Amino acid sequence: MIRIERRLTESRWLVAAVPAGSLVAAAILSGLILLVTGHDPVATWSRLLDRGFFAPGAMSATLVTATPLLLTGLAAAAAFRMQTWNIGAEGQLYLGAVGASGIGIALRDQSPFLVIPAMILAGIVTGAAWAAIPGVLRAYTRTNEIITSLMLNYVAGLLMSYLIFDSHSYWRDLSTFTARVFPQGKYLPDAASWPNFPLGGIAIPLGFVLGMIAAAVLWVIYTATRFGFEARVIGDSRAAAHYAGIRTRRKIVAVMALSGALAGIGGASEIGDFRHVLDPRGLQQASFGYAGIVVAALARLNPFAVIVVAILLGGLSNAGFSLQGATFPAGLVGTLQGLILFCALAGELLVHYRIRFARRAGAAPPAPVPARAEIA
Image (tube, rainbow, N blue to C red):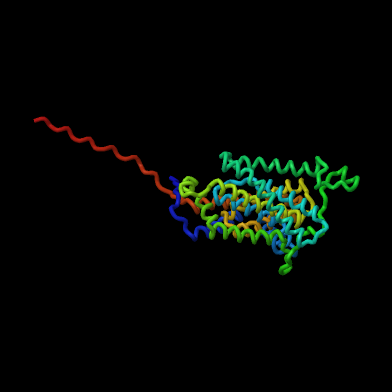
């Protein structure tokens, strides 16, 4: 007989041991899958690690992929820590890209010292404003934020596509006949290109640096400020928070806006660091916002762990792109990533619950029938 019991206290060693054990379990399971599909597990994992982290230029490419995962992972962690379920980081990233590209185009003749901060600020403002919509609906009308934030992703995607493909908007390039026939966005000037920071042969994007700073700020907010304390209280019990006089409505809107601002920086980074043009199809195919939820879950909502997980998943994705071919399909890398997520979530069960194996007790023997008293 198997019973699952909730732990009254969480052991510290389990918090460290379970994630490590989850990675080992994922490696074993993925090895079995690789064997079944006709691949050498040791050689495959060696190639993945080499192409993702150790080959010349691999780490720089990994940070390119990890940057949006880091920022959308922080966006999800910021909201989830208050038990507010923002599923709209995808759309908030789109709006951040729209805002940053618009400012970059408008300030094309200005100095990079003005253009780049303006792009970051535009990404923050547009992402926060888009996330505040489901926040206000949740706080003042009790509308489920999961549904509203998810639906707004599609609205944001359609809006971004409309700006480039279905209108003569400010973001669309209409300078040539070819551009008018084949819609594309305006490319940003050189002043709007974000710098890289070389470190030991690795080019660190500015967006990744901003993500690390945001992780530190988020950790300070939730551990050392009144705002973070009240947010944790609301996450534990909104009834208790209301009884204690905490303004829960304002906190819900503020946390959603904070989450959207982080995703908006991710959108600005996509424009300033990598794409340099508003690319609706490329952004929608990448699905960085949904992947950020996975990153936050694997990191157990810890901002610093989000950095590590984003690099890990970014490396696996980067290696998958480089290894993709007839003998190594791209779906196989997705399977390996899914196994890591599955094992990590299964490991969470062991952190919060204990599994007991007990022998089923046999039926109790019938009670003895008292002897009938003799009648004298």
